[in-house]
Length: 433
Image (cartoon, rainbow, N blue to C red):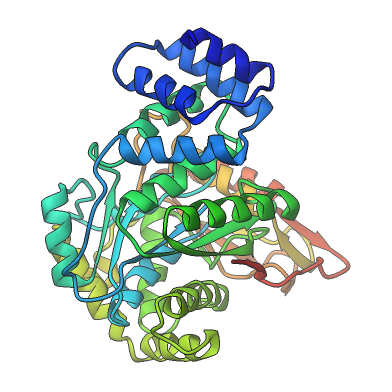
């Protein structure tokens, strides 16, 4: 079949045999297919979907387009975590060193901010000197020495995914559950891990706003990972209000350090422990979830994992002194207060907070935009609190007075005061395994 025939077949809702899809993807990697033709295929897949066989073929092709890592001598089970993204989500900064302290090995390849959601790499780069662009040889050495490593995707890992994602980003085909699943799972499998936990967020600040779609994505990824030999579980977690009290790169690093010291906000600790417990059970390092949570909570309380985080920072070229002295992190020159616009019960719209933080400079509106690591929001009250008119709800960290003023306007649409408490749901909505 001609390559254009494969596009037409998917456009019309037909099933692509493994050989057809493999040949099509191989032609694209070898330069025999133009970007505009692949864009047409992605749109067809976005509209028509991919059946399980097609999805499995796509995932394997992405994995096989690059190197599949192996970690046979790193001294412990090799695991990873992935989040579909939210506002204030700094879980990875806490979880990676915590799992390493528990004897697991975490070769974490992370991404940058996307839309209104923050990115782990942007947070790490707020640490002076921290290098996220690390070659695979150094990556392995850091993992062996520290127990965890946190880097960006390299050109050797799943290069087909990088090319496909660049097209999806400019053709309106990013929010496709099968394409999302193939992208995420392929990269995690290529890392050489044995177990994976997925944090699939849903709510006003999540990529997936409703539970039904989030559950479907979680099920697809869990099954896809299992088919590739990776033990996987997924937790659906609520992302209606920001996670924790800090939104912004250096601010979130500060909050992660506070959590590794045994403090930190309750919701951040809860999500971190829930995800970590799943992995400990998956690799038989705990008898059940409660046993795993107890062990991990003890490590947070003792501050044991904070030293591991300092070692990670040093191994990747950063200043390890920030672990003991977060004031070494960069800070914004302007701070302004945002007060409650009335008395009553507070609700906070995570998605609108995320957009406000991007406009402030904490994220990117265009791929070439620079990120300001210092700016963001520090929340003094959380959703569900009863507040009084005029009391300070948020400290705005901004580059200048104009940015602070604009951020205050945007926060006005993200904060709601009502006479009745807002509807609340638990943080952990469902487990998919």
